[in-house]
Image 1 (cartoon, rainbow over the protein chains, first blue to last red):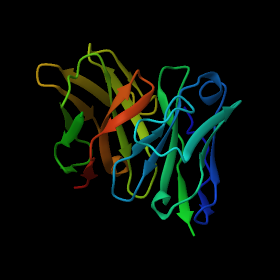
Image 2: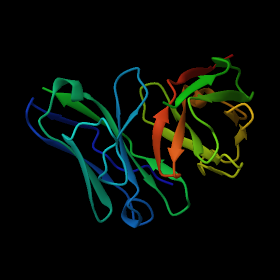
Image 3: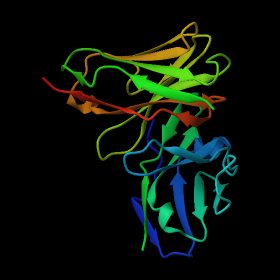
Length: 110
Length: 117
């Protein structure tokens, strides 16, 4: 299975909105509403931010939102804050009942 | 609050077998899927495989020939064995709960395993 495709880096200024894309195939992202997103700060374990494409776990800010169109899922962060600077990973369930990660995106808050 | 803790050797010799255990506390291992994920230094996350509490498993095709994941419900633990390791297997290894086999909702803190002679 091939890793999902994410941009290596994105950046934005405080208060702005950014979107991170996650592109797969009809066998993973496009075939199921089972995309999740994780935030990882340096030296820390990943943290679940979005599950089932657009659902937020309890305790996650509503500045984080998810969507999907075709084979591409997206994570949008609005009202950027310095604490949002981190690496972000998408994951999808696949037609083989496996999981596949994206390559990760480094978010820089300018 | 569910908590996970990885344990095992931090150094493994090339060609040997890497063995790690994840201990689950604050909840039962039953009725859930459990997974291993790894992250080489400076690189992205890679899913290794999962196990259901009943013992059924599924693995990343790229690692399938070398991976075994097992569960011990009596100890609330699950384990990872990765055989014939090389330097490319050097990574932080995370255990996590895989909710409905779809998303990882609880993670361990991770354990760095270095493959070196």
